[in-house]
Every structure is written in structure tokens, then in C-alpha cells.
Amino acid sequence: MTEKTLRIEDAAKLIELFGSYDENVNAIQKEYSVSVVNRGEDIKITGAEENAQNALEAVKALLALIAKGERINEQNLHYVFSLVREGLSDEIVKLSDDAICVTLKGSVVKPKTIGQKKYIDAIRKNTVVIGVGPAGTGKTYLAVAMAVKAFRAHEVSRIILTRPAVEAGEKLGFLPGDLQNKVDPYLRPLYDALFDMLGPDAFARQTERGCIEVAPLAYMRGRTLDDSFIILDEAQNTTPEQMKMFLTRLGFGSKIVITGDVTQIDLPDPKRSGLIEAVRVLKNVEDICINRFTEKDVVRHRLVQDIIRAYEKYYERGAGHKNG
Image 1: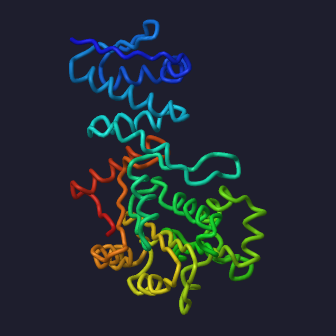
Image 2 (image 1 turned 180 degrees about the horizontal axis):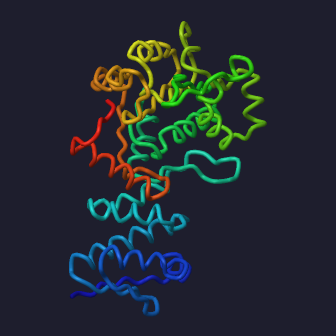
């Protein structure tokens, strides 16, 4: 048994670290099989040498988040645990320094994982970025945030959001209204992200001016998109022909972000996903970055990570059929 001691002179940080009813410290004790107690300004961690050291690294990482104004919750607590396991706990301080934009409700949009940080950096540095990974990793939301930031900074004059109109396994049947009304259900996630950043009124004004366009992928054919930030969402449901068509819409002064999850392909022939082919074809092309997310980058409920891991293990055993 060994004891590690860490001095915390700021009482507010200590309160945030321990959490309501000591829930954060209880989670640390459970994760590392250690005892964590507060003695005045000191935190004392007692346990096996390796466990106590890992717990100390986790506490330091959590304090770094608190110092940046972050609230400790279940998601970032478990993410810190995963970083400690990989020896990357020092990387956590880089995340909170990178504010992208502010939502209508005043929340600051910023990367919450190292994978998300690499994604944001890739979008800044490259003309075309392909973000591939599971649900809940923020692929679309962060891309929309970067688009809004570029638009507000007058780096582009238009935001164009598109996705293929492919049904996710079920038939939607007859939809009333004009053509836009019929395709709107497919585009709802893109609307939601924009409403969060801009609000419905500002979104409507910019749409009327032609500065924001949300449309199905078929609307992109025959166009050249200059001075635009273009996002293709759910790209796993494009055919190779559609993907090539979309990529060749790129005009001067524009940036493209493509997002998708190759485990959620709804095409009749999953092997013909345009996203899978694009990743293979474009992996060595200059100014194009392929950014891969893992279950560690999931920022939804903790169970989403567990669900993704469970399915991956199931497919690895050959018990099921995995698209792509």
C-alpha cells in the first residue's frame, strides 16, 4: 500500500472535484480500488502503487478541467479514466482552450475529447475532411459549429448542408406537402444543429437570403460551389457515383466536411457505400484528411459507448453481419 498526497488550496475546486454527495470521488475510488480522503487542503489517495498513481493522475486531470471552468459530470469523468488508461491524461488540458462558437443559449461549443480536437484541427488545416465514426461522437454538430464560425467571420459567404435521402430501414410512405416538405424529415438533424447555433429566426433570414441552404444530395448535381462551407452528412448512404459527384462540386474558397458511420449503411448493397470507397481512394491525397472517431469520443450517455463496444465484440466473433 502507498499514499499519494495532492494539495488543493482553492476550496471551490475541491468542492467541484468531490461532487454532490462525493459522487465524483466515489467513482474514482471504485475505478481504481483506492481510498480518497480530504484532510484540510490535502487530498490523500491510498492504495496499491499503480492504482494510487492512476487515481492521482485522474484527479490532476479533473482539476485541470475545473480550472478551465468545466463542470465534472459522468461523461468527462469516465473519459478521464480512459485517458489515464492510455497514459494520455496530460492531453486533457488542451480541450477546453478551443472554443468554436457560442450557441443561442450561451453554451460554448468546444471539443470534449482528443478525437474531437483532432477533427476540429483537421477542418481548420484542410480543404476536405472526412469524419468517420460511431453515433454520438459529434461529427455533424462540430462540423456545423465550424461552418457557423467561418460564416460569422466572413471566411465563407454560404453554408450548404446536405445528406442523401435514404430511409433508415423503414418506409416513411407518402409524405404531404411540396418537395421541400417531403425531404425535410431526412434533413432534420441538420436543422436541429443550425437552430441550436443560430436560432430559428436567424436561420430563416439567412435561408431567405440564400446564405444557408439545407438540401438533399440530389440538389448538388451540376453545381459549382464557390466560397462555401459544405457539409455532407450520413455519407455512408451515398453511392460511389454520388460521392464523386459531390466531391467534384468543390469550388474556389470552399471547404468540405463529410461525415458518416460505416456501421449504419442503409443502402441495398452496403459494399457499394461511397464513403467506404472515398476513404480508400482519397487517403493519400494532399489537403484531404481522414479523421476516425472511436467509442471513446462518444459524448452521449455513457451507455452509448458500452453499446458500441458490445456490438463490435459481437461482430468480431462472427456472430452477426456488419455493414461495410
